[in-house]
Image (cartoon, rainbow over the protein chains, first blue to last red):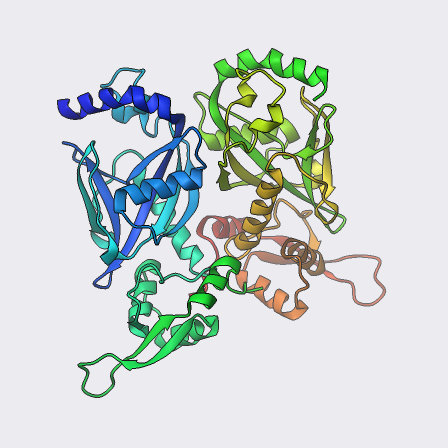
Length: 250
Length: 250
């Protein structure tokens, strides 16, 4: 670990002890969709090789959901966010070893159980910012994903599994796509998340059955013959489906 | 709060501080199926009116999953358990107010973020036991559920929602039904969990498609004409489906 990072960690420890609950952290898997690729926002601590999920701690008088929102807002500047908890990770030594060179009373070196949240975010609205401890905060294409430090690879895998499951229950896309989009764009988003090709006709019928799309009287320009139709989400139906879920399959 | 419970809490506090991580607890929603009813195991603290979900704390050198297993084993004596995490609850004052009459340094009175697990358990194999702090540990039919203390009503609702979702992904029944069962018994279990009537033919076809059942050359005795067939789970196929999930619907 670089001397400068060590100094910064030591300098922050006292303030962190006063401000945050010990033993509980939050890690966020922030998904964005751009150029037909699903991307995840990763940070790199100053001078370190491995990338990490952006995370933070829970203030002593703060709900965990609010803490997750604050961490995300702080990191991305984005407020129009779909944010949902997926799993809590609590193996012993999942994070402690990373701080092995540091004194035992360092706030960060305690054992931490971390609550995983995933977020869906409009790629274009975003302004990723580094914090005191990091030297980089960048989007990474999930098809060329780097090695992550601590147990963050497991947490990332948990998020993508949950996102796949959630596709069956809640609408996904509002925070990931531009306001107007084509059916092939929406299908591509689903294919990237599910990591498989989908049948075009079946996908179309299923999406229309969900009753969350409005077909616009506009077409994409620049196509000679068969210009694709543009759609947008029906905000009320989308919200309803977010709250109540799609009809389940039983 | 009864004086005797206060004394017991005070007496345990020092030991708990040494043994357990502060601020993190585990609560378990333990489901059993008996006489066509879905039941949940609840405890009542000595002299209190409201029931609670059985729970406990995480030892300083223990994985959270192992902690959940230990808590469940201690409470029920059962080891053949389907146990899965569903959600972590961390609103401020979710549990603190319950201990308002107690001194501030009591271990239990700290702010706790609690990790919810649900368990499916063979009703008949079980021997619910009270601990030092409780005066009752009993099964409650979910159709006549009592009022729960703290935020345990929310935690229970989260568990039943997750169990319903999980029906689409993993086989449910092995730990809830006797070794041999009829298709109507299995259907009744699903209906109780989903809280709705299912079509008999559709249910049968879906179950057979999952390929987890073995039809036995035995029938239930005591029926004059149409004795129902008996089935059992195929342990290998069941295990495979538990690990890989059912084919998803996309």
